[in-house]
Structure formats: C-alpha cells, structure tokens
Image (tube, rainbow, N blue to C red; front, top):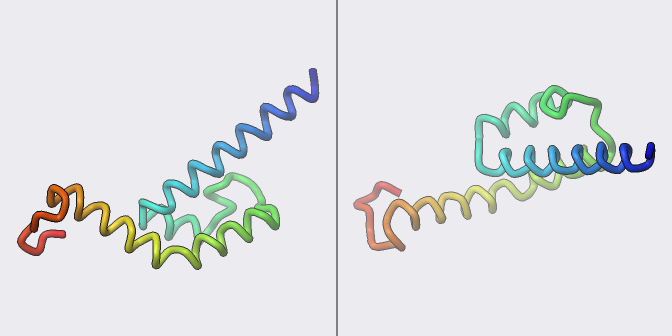
Length: 87
C-alpha cells in the first residue's frame, strides 16, 4: 500500500513538472519567473535533474521561440496566406 502511494506521488510530481515545462515554452512571462526563482515555481528544492532540465530548456529557447512564432503566424494568417505584416 505504501509503495502505491509513493508511486502515485511520484507520478503527480512528474505531471506537474511536464506542465511547468510546457507553460514555460509558450508563456514568456512565466518562463522569466521560472528561471528567476525555480524553487518558488516548483514549490520545493530542485533536484540535479531538474536543474539540468532547466538548463536544456534555456539552450532550446531560441529555436522554440521561432517555432511558436511560426505556428502563431500560420494560425493567424490562415496557412501563410499573408497578414499584411501582422505575424
């Protein structure tokens, strides 16, 4: 029984971390907060793997920002049909 509770708690932490990473990818304001004080966002002290994951995200951000910008342009401009400089 205790093992099942530990597994459920670990799965919940994993889901929370995925949600935090996903939000950081698409929300620049949240991303700034995350990198300024990650312990506050996660609600606990970060593990070495958490710190490494944040470093990887920071290295990938320029490419991710380009992808998000491109996708936003596709959505807003109906498949690249031209927006008159809006995207």
